[in-house]
Length: 228
Image 1 (cartoon, rainbow, N blue to C red):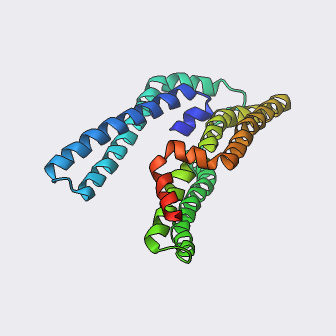
Image 2: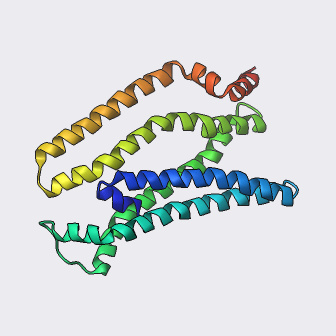
Image 3: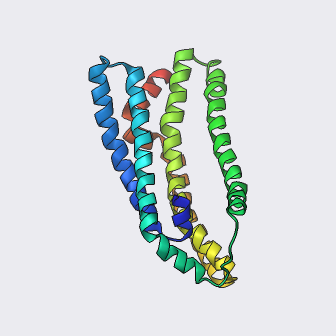
């Protein structure tokens, strides 16, 4: 549903659903975990289940907003689509095939990303165990996966937000065969990516230690303790 509105360059609907989802996720997580902690005598398994349930309910809330928004704007959207130059009727089965042709590779990419993290979880720890005890190796991997990866992926998340807004606009320009707009928007995207990515890369390479000390002082002190 978010992809549908993104493709229509209606970013407001997507942003509202995401904001609503995050508000529900935060609120429901706190409420459900607290209630379950009281009922189950602070059982970590049940509390983790409550947090997962809160995330699921928040996702449904975000979807519910988009569905209601679509229902209220459906006729207006239909009139707009029928008035376009390239409008033609397509069978639902053909539309589903086209969606699957695009979505399956994207889903496989996401799966591979998760698999890479699982592979790192035992290859990195196994390599570190050759130089330090196992508990220290696990702690070091925790710093890498939970803190360093979070910092390095932050600039990427900004670029992903840009791509969410720019890809539909570039696709629309391609459908109109507007090469000038395609060139301008692609150049703008690359420029912003370089302006964000290069300073972050240089800063994280030079000031990696101070950044980690500032944001995660406990992890950094544990690292120094292990090194000593």
